[in-house]
Length: 262
Ligand SMILES: [Zn+2]
Ligand SMILES: [Zn+2]
Image (cartoon, rainbow, N blue to C red; front, side):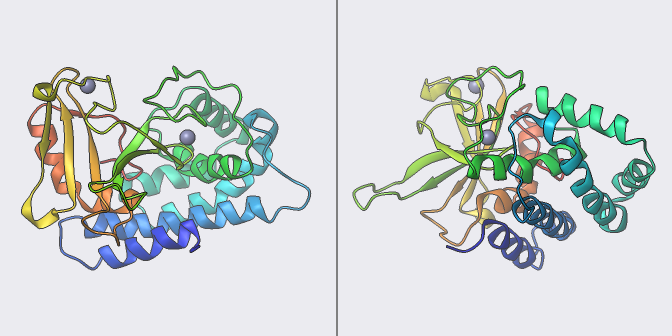
C-alpha cells in the first residue's frame, strides 16, 4: 500500500501544474504535506514512544516536531502565515502549548498551526489505536467516530463489485481517517429531504461537486472516485477551490475550512 502522505504529496505536485485557478494553493499545500509527513515520521520513529491520546502528556514531543512546520511556512507560506510562523518561532513554548491544548479540546478550522501539526499526531494516534482524551466534542454519526472531528470532505468509492454507484465516506479533518456515511444526507445537520439538498458542479471538474443543504445552509465537497479513481479526496478538494466561490456566493458556509483556508 502506498504511504498515505506520499500519495497526497504526489497528487498535490501533479495538480499544482494543472490550470484550475488553485496552483498557488496546491504548491503551498504540497510543501505543507511534506512537513506533515516529516512530523508524522518523527513520531513514528521515536524510540519507546507512542501517543498517549492525552495531548497534555505528549506536548513536548508535538511542540518539538512543530518547529519544522514553522520553518517551512515561514519560507513557503503566503505573507500573513509566513510572518505568523516567524512570530511563533520566537514565542514562549508555554503560549504555544496553550494554543495546541485549546485546539485539541475544541477545534476551530481557522487555527492553521494547531490543525496542521495535530493532523499527523491524530493520524498516528488513530493508526496505533489510541483514542483521544480531553476533547470537548459533540459526537454523533456526522463526526469522526475515532476522534470526534468534523468531516473535511465527502467521497464516493466502489467498495464491493455489487455496488454500482459507490459508497459514501466522510474524511475527518483532524485524524484524516474516514467513516461510512449515508449518501443523500446533509453531513452537517442530517437533513434527508431531497428537496432541501442541492448539488453543484462545473464541467471542468467532473468528479467533484458541492453538496449543499438548504436547511442549515452548510456545504461540503464530494469527490467521486468512481468517476476518477486517481483522485485523492483531501487534495482534489483543494484543487476545486473555484467551487467554493460558487457556494459562498450562494450563501452556503463550509462545514470545515481546509488547511489552506478555503
Ligand atoms: Zn478523526
Ligand atoms: Zn444541513
